[in-house]
Amino acid sequence: MTRALIALLSGLLFGAGLAYSGMSDPARVQAFLDLFGQWDPTLAFVMGGAMLPMAAAWVIKSRLSAPLAAPAFDLPGTATLDRPLAFGAILFGMGWGIAGLCPGPALADLAIAPGDVAPFVVAMFAGMAVQRFTSSRSQKPTQAGPK
Amino acid sequence: MIPAFPNAMRVEGFMGGLLIGLAAAIMLLGLGRIAGVSGLAARATGIADTGAPRNVAIAFVLGLPLGALLISQTLGAVHVSFPTSIWPLIIGGLLVGYGTRLGSGCTSGHGVCGLSCLSPRSMVATGMFMTSGFVTVGLLRAGGLL
Image 1 (cartoon, each protein chain N blue to C red):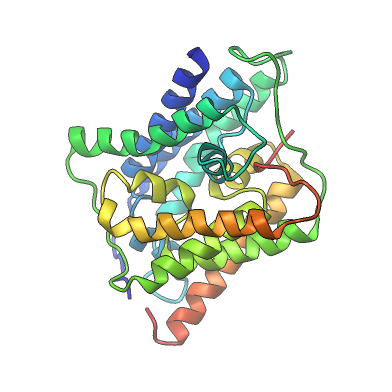
Image 2: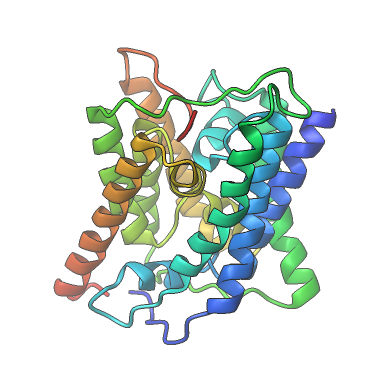
Protein backbone atom coordinates (compact mmCIF):
# COMPACT_ATOMS: atom_id res chain seq x y z
CA MET A 1 0.00 0.00 0.00
CA THR A 2 2.76 2.42 0.99
CA ARG A 3 4.66 1.45 -2.15
CA ALA A 4 1.66 2.02 -4.38
CA LEU A 5 1.18 5.45 -2.81
CA ILE A 6 4.83 6.36 -3.41
CA ALA A 7 4.48 5.22 -7.03
CA LEU A 8 1.28 7.25 -7.36
CA LEU A 9 3.07 10.34 -6.00
CA SER A 10 5.93 9.77 -8.43
CA GLY A 11 3.53 9.38 -11.37
CA LEU A 12 1.57 12.44 -10.25
CA LEU A 13 4.67 14.66 -10.11
CA PHE A 14 5.86 13.20 -13.42
CA GLY A 15 2.54 13.95 -15.13
CA ALA A 16 2.38 17.43 -13.59
CA GLY A 17 5.91 18.13 -14.81
CA LEU A 18 5.05 16.98 -18.34
CA ALA A 19 1.94 19.19 -18.48
CA TYR A 20 3.64 22.21 -16.91
CA SER A 21 6.71 22.00 -19.15
CA GLY A 22 4.73 21.89 -22.38
CA MET A 23 5.87 18.34 -23.12
CA SER A 24 2.28 17.10 -23.21
CA ASP A 25 1.90 19.08 -26.44
CA PRO A 26 2.81 16.88 -29.44
CA ALA A 27 3.35 19.94 -31.66
CA ARG A 28 5.94 21.34 -29.23
CA VAL A 29 7.84 18.06 -29.00
CA GLN A 30 7.77 17.62 -32.76
CA ALA A 31 9.01 21.20 -33.12
CA PHE A 32 12.05 20.26 -31.01
CA LEU A 33 12.82 17.52 -33.51
CA ASP A 34 12.19 19.87 -36.45
CA LEU A 35 15.68 21.30 -36.99
CA PHE A 36 14.80 22.66 -40.42
CA GLY A 37 11.49 24.19 -39.38
CA GLN A 38 10.58 26.53 -36.55
CA TRP A 39 12.81 24.86 -33.98
CA ASP A 40 11.58 24.91 -30.36
CA PRO A 41 14.28 24.22 -27.76
CA THR A 42 11.89 23.70 -24.82
CA LEU A 43 12.56 19.95 -24.59
CA ALA A 44 16.25 20.60 -23.94
CA PHE A 45 15.35 22.77 -20.94
CA VAL A 46 13.07 20.04 -19.63
CA MET A 47 15.83 17.44 -19.91
CA GLY A 48 18.27 19.81 -18.24
CA GLY A 49 15.87 20.43 -15.37
CA ALA A 50 15.20 16.72 -14.91
CA MET A 51 18.92 15.89 -14.74
CA LEU A 52 19.52 17.90 -11.55
CA PRO A 53 17.30 16.02 -9.04
CA MET A 54 18.28 12.73 -10.66
CA ALA A 55 22.01 13.43 -10.50
CA ALA A 56 21.57 14.18 -6.78
CA ALA A 57 19.45 11.05 -6.39
CA TRP A 58 22.19 8.82 -7.86
CA VAL A 59 24.71 10.27 -5.40
CA ILE A 60 22.34 9.61 -2.48
CA LYS A 61 21.58 6.16 -3.87
CA SER A 62 25.26 5.23 -3.81
CA ARG A 63 25.21 5.75 -0.02
CA LEU A 64 22.13 3.63 0.61
CA SER A 65 22.20 -0.13 0.99
CA ALA A 66 18.48 -0.35 0.18
CA PRO A 67 15.74 2.02 -0.97
CA LEU A 68 13.66 3.72 1.72
CA ALA A 69 10.44 1.77 1.16
CA ALA A 70 11.44 -1.45 -0.61
CA PRO A 71 13.72 -4.34 0.34
CA ALA A 72 16.31 -3.86 -2.40
CA PHE A 73 17.26 -1.83 -5.46
CA ASP A 74 16.03 -3.47 -8.66
CA LEU A 75 17.78 -1.71 -11.51
CA PRO A 76 18.54 -2.81 -15.07
CA GLY A 77 22.09 -3.37 -16.30
CA THR A 78 23.86 -0.50 -18.01
CA ALA A 79 26.72 -2.01 -19.96
CA THR A 80 25.41 -4.34 -22.67
CA LEU A 81 25.09 -2.71 -26.07
CA ASP A 82 23.13 -5.00 -28.36
CA ARG A 83 21.13 -5.02 -31.55
CA PRO A 84 17.64 -4.85 -29.97
CA LEU A 85 18.67 -1.75 -28.02
CA ALA A 86 19.74 0.00 -31.23
CA PHE A 87 16.86 -1.16 -33.46
CA GLY A 88 14.33 -0.44 -30.74
CA ALA A 89 15.65 3.08 -30.16
CA ILE A 90 15.63 3.83 -33.90
CA LEU A 91 12.02 2.61 -34.32
CA PHE A 92 10.97 4.50 -31.20
CA GLY A 93 12.59 7.70 -32.54
CA MET A 94 10.70 7.34 -35.83
CA GLY A 95 7.36 7.03 -34.05
CA TRP A 96 8.26 9.87 -31.69
CA GLY A 97 8.97 12.12 -34.66
CA ILE A 98 5.89 11.10 -36.63
CA ALA A 99 3.41 11.66 -33.79
CA GLY A 100 5.29 14.03 -31.47
CA LEU A 101 4.48 11.70 -28.61
CA CYS A 102 6.38 9.31 -26.36
CA PRO A 103 4.80 7.10 -23.67
CA GLY A 104 4.77 9.57 -20.72
CA PRO A 105 3.12 12.51 -22.49
CA ALA A 106 0.71 10.16 -24.27
CA LEU A 107 -0.57 8.77 -20.95
CA ALA A 108 -0.64 12.24 -19.34
CA ASP A 109 -2.69 13.53 -22.29
CA LEU A 110 -5.45 11.05 -21.42
CA ALA A 111 -6.50 13.71 -18.89
CA ILE A 112 -6.05 16.69 -21.21
CA ALA A 113 -7.20 15.55 -24.64
CA PRO A 114 -8.47 11.97 -24.26
CA GLY A 115 -10.20 11.83 -27.64
CA ASP A 116 -7.15 13.14 -29.48
CA VAL A 117 -4.58 10.89 -27.82
CA ALA A 118 -6.67 7.71 -27.66
CA PRO A 119 -5.65 6.35 -31.10
CA PHE A 120 -1.97 6.79 -30.19
CA VAL A 121 -2.33 5.09 -26.80
CA VAL A 122 -4.23 2.14 -28.28
CA ALA A 123 -1.66 1.77 -31.08
CA MET A 124 1.20 2.06 -28.56
CA PHE A 125 -0.09 -0.79 -26.42
CA ALA A 126 -0.74 -2.80 -29.58
CA GLY A 127 2.89 -2.21 -30.61
CA MET A 128 4.07 -3.32 -27.17
CA ALA A 129 1.95 -6.47 -27.39
CA VAL A 130 3.26 -7.24 -30.90
CA GLN A 131 6.82 -6.88 -29.63
CA ARG A 132 6.12 -9.22 -26.76
CA PHE A 133 4.64 -11.93 -28.94
CA THR A 134 7.29 -11.66 -31.65
CA SER A 135 10.22 -11.86 -29.26
CA SER A 136 10.18 -15.61 -28.83
CA ARG A 137 13.85 -15.80 -27.94
CA SER A 138 15.59 -14.51 -24.83
CA GLN A 139 13.89 -12.64 -22.02
CA LYS A 140 14.50 -8.91 -22.12
CA PRO A 141 14.92 -6.33 -19.40
CA THR A 142 11.63 -4.49 -18.90
CA GLN A 143 13.00 -1.04 -18.29
CA ALA A 144 15.64 1.38 -19.30
CA GLY A 145 18.82 2.51 -17.85
CA PRO A 146 21.20 2.27 -15.10
CA LYS A 147 22.53 0.08 -12.37
CA MET B 1 0.42 18.25 -40.41
CA ILE B 2 1.15 19.93 -37.07
CA PRO B 3 1.27 23.72 -36.94
CA ALA B 4 4.71 25.19 -36.18
CA PHE B 5 5.37 26.40 -32.66
CA PRO B 6 7.05 29.78 -32.47
CA ASN B 7 7.50 30.40 -28.73
CA ALA B 8 9.74 28.31 -26.52
CA MET B 9 8.92 27.90 -22.81
CA ARG B 10 12.36 27.97 -21.23
CA VAL B 11 11.39 28.68 -17.61
CA GLU B 12 8.33 26.43 -17.56
CA GLY B 13 10.35 23.76 -19.34
CA PHE B 14 13.11 23.88 -16.76
CA MET B 15 10.67 23.96 -13.79
CA GLY B 16 8.61 21.12 -15.27
CA GLY B 17 11.84 19.23 -15.84
CA LEU B 18 12.71 19.63 -12.14
CA LEU B 19 9.34 18.08 -11.26
CA ILE B 20 9.99 15.17 -13.61
CA GLY B 21 13.45 14.66 -12.11
CA LEU B 22 12.00 14.80 -8.60
CA ALA B 23 9.41 12.20 -9.59
CA ALA B 24 12.14 9.89 -10.91
CA ALA B 25 14.24 10.52 -7.76
CA ILE B 26 11.31 9.47 -5.55
CA MET B 27 10.95 6.27 -7.55
CA LEU B 28 14.68 5.53 -7.30
CA LEU B 29 15.23 6.34 -3.62
CA GLY B 30 11.81 5.28 -2.37
CA LEU B 31 11.20 2.09 -4.34
CA GLY B 32 14.63 1.34 -5.81
CA ARG B 33 13.34 1.46 -9.38
CA ILE B 34 13.71 3.37 -12.62
CA ALA B 35 10.77 5.65 -13.46
CA GLY B 36 10.62 4.29 -16.99
CA VAL B 37 7.18 4.96 -18.41
CA SER B 38 7.26 2.39 -21.23
CA GLY B 39 8.32 -0.42 -18.90
CA LEU B 40 5.85 0.52 -16.18
CA ALA B 41 3.02 0.93 -18.70
CA ALA B 42 3.74 -2.51 -20.16
CA ARG B 43 3.81 -3.95 -16.66
CA ALA B 44 0.61 -2.16 -15.58
CA THR B 45 -1.30 -3.58 -18.54
CA GLY B 46 0.15 -7.06 -18.12
CA ILE B 47 2.02 -6.92 -21.45
CA ALA B 48 5.24 -7.43 -19.47
CA ASP B 49 5.29 -10.09 -16.81
CA THR B 50 8.54 -9.11 -15.17
CA GLY B 51 9.55 -5.80 -13.65
CA ALA B 52 7.90 -3.68 -11.00
CA PRO B 53 5.16 -5.13 -8.77
CA ARG B 54 1.87 -4.77 -10.60
CA ASN B 55 0.30 -2.38 -8.08
CA VAL B 56 3.34 -0.09 -8.21
CA ALA B 57 3.19 0.03 -12.02
CA ILE B 58 -0.57 0.68 -12.06
CA ALA B 59 -0.31 3.43 -9.43
CA PHE B 60 2.50 5.18 -11.34
CA VAL B 61 0.65 4.99 -14.66
CA LEU B 62 -2.56 6.35 -13.08
CA GLY B 63 -0.53 9.19 -11.58
CA LEU B 64 0.50 10.51 -15.01
CA PRO B 65 -2.93 11.73 -16.18
CA LEU B 66 -3.83 12.73 -12.61
CA GLY B 67 -0.76 14.97 -12.45
CA ALA B 68 -1.62 16.53 -15.79
CA LEU B 69 -5.20 17.02 -14.57
CA LEU B 70 -3.88 18.73 -11.43
CA ILE B 71 -2.01 21.27 -13.57
CA SER B 72 -4.94 21.93 -15.91
CA GLN B 73 -7.32 22.34 -12.96
CA THR B 74 -5.09 24.64 -10.93
CA LEU B 75 -3.15 26.65 -13.53
CA GLY B 76 -5.62 26.66 -16.41
CA ALA B 77 -6.02 24.69 -19.60
CA VAL B 78 -2.88 22.98 -20.90
CA HIS B 79 -2.40 23.74 -24.57
CA VAL B 80 -2.02 20.70 -26.79
CA SER B 81 -2.05 20.52 -30.57
CA PHE B 82 -2.49 17.14 -32.21
CA PRO B 83 -1.98 15.99 -35.79
CA THR B 84 -5.19 16.52 -37.75
CA SER B 85 -5.01 13.10 -39.37
CA ILE B 86 -5.32 9.92 -37.33
CA TRP B 87 -2.59 8.12 -39.30
CA PRO B 88 0.46 9.75 -37.68
CA LEU B 89 -1.03 8.81 -34.32
CA ILE B 90 -1.59 5.19 -35.26
CA ILE B 91 1.71 4.68 -37.09
CA GLY B 92 3.62 6.65 -34.46
CA GLY B 93 1.93 4.75 -31.64
CA LEU B 94 2.78 1.35 -33.12
CA LEU B 95 6.43 2.33 -33.62
CA VAL B 96 6.71 3.86 -30.14
CA GLY B 97 5.14 0.83 -28.47
CA TYR B 98 7.20 -1.73 -30.41
CA GLY B 99 10.42 0.29 -30.29
CA THR B 100 10.39 1.17 -26.61
CA ARG B 101 9.87 -2.46 -25.62
CA LEU B 102 12.52 -3.77 -28.00
CA GLY B 103 14.96 -1.04 -26.92
CA SER B 104 14.07 -1.46 -23.21
CA GLY B 105 13.08 2.13 -22.59
CA CYS B 106 11.96 5.53 -23.72
CA THR B 107 12.63 9.19 -22.98
CA SER B 108 12.07 8.72 -19.25
CA GLY B 109 14.00 5.51 -18.56
CA HIS B 110 16.90 5.96 -20.98
CA GLY B 111 16.70 9.74 -21.23
CA VAL B 112 16.07 11.08 -17.73
CA CYS B 113 17.14 8.14 -15.55
CA GLY B 114 19.86 6.57 -17.68
CA LEU B 115 21.66 9.71 -18.83
CA SER B 116 21.77 11.10 -15.29
CA CYS B 117 23.86 8.13 -14.13
CA LEU B 118 25.88 7.98 -17.37
CA SER B 119 24.66 4.49 -18.30
CA PRO B 120 26.38 3.51 -21.58
CA ARG B 121 23.26 1.61 -22.70
CA SER B 122 21.08 4.63 -22.12
CA MET B 123 23.51 7.06 -23.71
CA VAL B 124 23.56 4.93 -26.87
CA ALA B 125 19.76 4.49 -26.85
CA THR B 126 19.09 8.19 -26.26
CA GLY B 127 21.56 9.22 -28.96
CA MET B 128 19.89 6.83 -31.39
CA PHE B 129 16.27 7.74 -30.72
CA MET B 130 17.06 11.46 -30.77
CA THR B 131 18.94 11.11 -34.06
CA SER B 132 16.16 8.95 -35.46
CA GLY B 133 13.59 11.57 -34.39
CA PHE B 134 15.55 14.43 -35.99
CA VAL B 135 15.99 12.48 -39.24
CA THR B 136 12.34 11.36 -39.32
CA VAL B 137 10.97 14.87 -38.82
CA GLY B 138 13.53 16.22 -41.29
CA LEU B 139 12.32 13.71 -43.89
CA LEU B 140 8.67 14.56 -43.16
CA ARG B 141 9.51 18.23 -43.72
CA ALA B 142 11.50 17.49 -46.87
CA GLY B 143 8.58 15.42 -48.14
CA GLY B 144 6.14 18.28 -47.51
CA LEU B 145 4.30 16.36 -44.80
CA LEU B 146 4.73 18.99 -42.05
